[in-house]
Amino acid sequence: MGSRRFIPISPDSHRQLRWAQRIKEKTIKLAVEMERLVNEAPADTRRALRRIAEGDLGRVQPPAMESLASRVSHDLERLTSAITAAALVVSGSLPDPTR
Image (cartoon, rainbow, N blue to C red; front, side, top):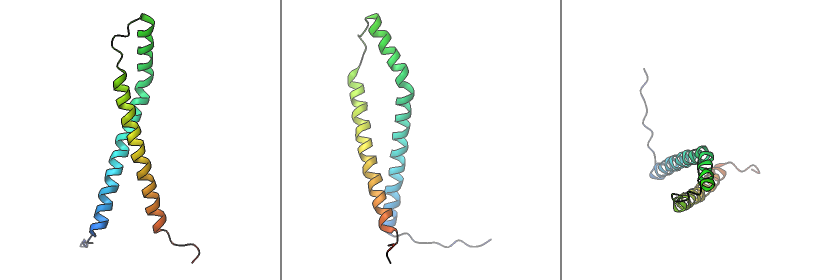
């Protein structure tokens, strides 16, 4: 059995790893929420249309949808920024093809 060598990580690398982990966690959370939204949307739409047809609109809650839309919009903005930043980091680390 070989011995393991300890490779120290610089504070900047550690910060980048934490940042990447946070992006991964938030991306997974957004994906799960979007999946839930897509899966539940047809049933919610049928339920709302049935209530409209029956004339029972007493329990429709548009503020909850506004809150969800706001959260999804905010999450998409953050995801876009994270992807852009990651692309810049990756492109900055690529070798210059003209050299």
